[in-house]
Image (cartoon, rainbow, N blue to C red):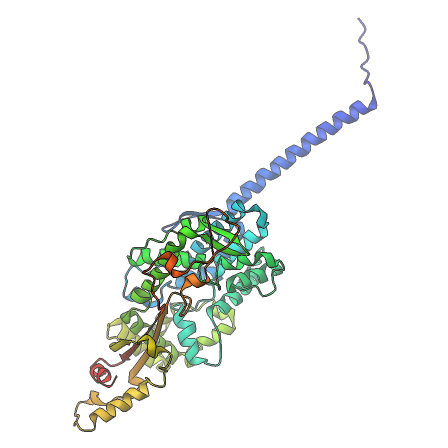
Length: 473
C-alpha cells in the first residue's frame, strides 16, 4: 500500500505550533533565570542568630554593607562605653546593636505596609529604611558618646561634630569604597533617615512618617531605642518588660505620623522610665563615670601626639579608630604618651578618680544655678578660705583646679523637661483614622510632674584629696 503524503492544513498552523514551542522555551528560560536569581539571593542573604530578636535574615544589599571594613569596625566599639568595667556582661558591641536596629526597622515598615497598603510604601522605601537602621551608628568613636561629647568637645570646642555626622560621612565612604548597590538619591535619603529630619532628599511630603522609624525627633520613640533598651538590659543583667514587637504591632500611621493604640500608653511610659533607669543605674554609674573621665584624660593628653580627633575629617583614618586605642597607648614607649600611660595604669589597678560628693538640685533652683556657681575653681577658693584658720601639714591639703572634676548630670525621659506623652499621638480602637492626644491624668495618676533631674557630682582625681574636695563642695 502506497504511503500517503502528509499535508498541513495551512501555513498558519505551522506558525502557531512554532510560536507555542518558542513560548514554552521562553517560559523554561525564565524559570531557569528565576531559580538562578533565587539561588543567588540565598547566597547573598544571611541569617543571624541574635540573643534578643532570635533569627534575623538580612538581604544581599545589607550583607554588602556588613561585609566591609567600615561596618566590621563596629565589632571593636563597646555599646555601653566604659560600663563593661563595672558590669562584666556589658561587652556587647555596636555591631550587633546595628543589626538589631536594622531588623526592627524592617519589622516596623513591613507592618505598616501590610496593614495600610494605601500608604504606598515601596520596595525602595523598605530598602532605605533598613539600611538607615543598619548604618545609624557607623560614626561612633572610641567608647561611643564619650568620644563626641567629651574628647572632641574638649580638644575642638569650636566644632559642633556629632556621631550622626560621622555616620553620614562613614556611610558615604563605605558606599564609594566598596561599590555597594546604592544610588546617590538613595544614599541622600538614607542619610536623612539617620538624621531623623527630611532635608529635601525625599520629595513625597506625605511620607514624613518614614523619618520617625530609626531616629524619631518628634517624640523619641524609635527602633533604635527599642533595641538598645532590650539589648543592654539583657547583657547587664537587669529586668525589662519592654516588648518591642507588641509596640510595632500596635503602630499605625495617622495624620502623617506614627501613632500607637491608646491602650499602649502605659507601655510607652514604661519604655521611657526604663530608659531613665538605665541612665541612672548603668550609663552614668558613679564608677563608670570615673573610669570614663580617666579614659578621657588619657586620650586628650595623647591627642597632640597621635592626632586622634583629627581623624573625624578623614574617614580613611577614622575607620581604624576604635576602643583598641587604649592598648595602642599602653604598648607605646614614647615619652610623649607617658602621662596617658600612667592614667591608664591607674585605671587598670583600680586606683580610680573618687566621687567626693553629689547632690540632686531642687527643681526650683535648676533654672537659676549655672556652672559659674559651682566649678573646680570655686571649690579651690572655698577650700582656701576654710584652711585659713587651720594649719595644714599634709601634702594632700593643697588643692588645684585640675584635681577636681565637676559633673553636671541631667537625666530625663529623652524629651528634656517635657513628658513624652505631650508629643505622642494615639488612635482609638474604633475610629483609627483620627489621631488623639492623652494627658497624664488619662493614663495614670502616678506619672510624675517633673521629668528632668539635675545631679551635680564632684570627683577628686587623687584619692587622698577627696575629703578636702567634699568639705569645700
